[in-house]
Amino acid sequence: MPRGHVVPDRVWWPQRGTDGQYPLMGRTRHPHQWLKAVYRPGAPLITQIDDGAVLPEAPTSNDAFISSLSCARVVVTMLRHLDPQPGETTLEIGTGTGYTTALLCHRLGDQAVTSIEVDTGLATTAAHRLGVLGVRPHLVTGDGTVPGQPLKSATGGGLAHPDRRPAVEGAEASVRTRLTNLRVRARHRTST
Image (cartoon, rainbow, N blue to C red; front, side, top):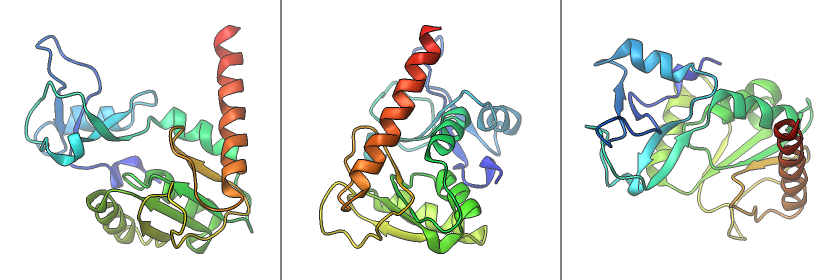
């Protein structure tokens, strides 16, 4: 699944330039720079700042990052540790751009993936982009940390941002185990 299909047309680079601003990269205005950033394995890209109050129209000094496209290396590592297998279902908390959702659907099938996103605008955009690609998982707009969301239980595990706790029975232990394994492996790699 090419990342460029789900990345917004304009994103911010997560490091300040010499002017103190986070540079804005655009698919049409600076296509080479945008494409290079999208496919750089160790580069996350900022997709929303300050709950959307900062529009992607220019560089900014505001560092209230709300949403980002995780770097490809991190996504691959998370998915490797999740180890999704055919026949399992997966819950993803934090749909964001839909990139990880698309990868999970490719591996497990659309009906085996449930993804929840708290931000209505991000959820709507992700649903549209995924639909254009022919990917149709169970998408929910809501807070995955609040009990009572219309979520499917995950038999194969789940992915969540480390600061979010899933509200689906059984998913929390699975997510906690996988995040712990990921942290332990990361610590081991950095200490060697």
